[in-house]
Length: 269
Image (cartoon, rainbow, N blue to C red; front, side, top):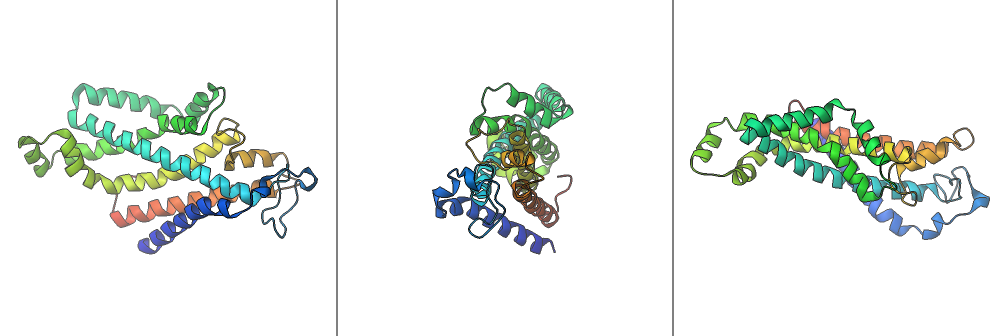
């Protein structure tokens, strides 16, 4: 069952990524030209998702929004995963004051609601760019990876082969790359799968509040925000971006659940 779920999830994620990269290049750019005479048109032939308030094709915008969301998610997970791996491993390996400082900082960040912290950071920016959004998400996102890695390394460094490697003069960078990382790969993959879904929710929330990507960049959260005021007369403006967010989150949660069962990873969610 887990193998089938994992295959389905990875296949769906690959299809989503391919659609996000290829479909906007195949569709004519005229679909995003403003035509106020056709604004708020319902789904029809030639416009599968209908038209938005400016007469632009909603299907084109939703698919383009997938490219933005996936790019932000992948970059955020790569940065937070790398930072969390290094910081968590250092704290567990060296211990002492390093570990105490690590626990203090992560406890403070975990005690503060992450979405409120991201909103506060975004609100201080006059205008957030794509890369500023990634940076804001990284400020919060590294903590979960770091705490996971710290717990794993505290257990791993007590094993006999790690102790033997340390006594033979093997230094931390080599230990991390050769001994710790192979054992951490499973938990990190599971955490990354759930993290992808979390980043998409966080980015959509910021964009919905007007604190995310710039207005000219298509985003699922911004499309939802634009559709709220027309919910009674043109519900398709909110339905299709909402479905895109929901299906994407289901895909990555399915991958995470299947990986956790397949790799027998405990304590990751």
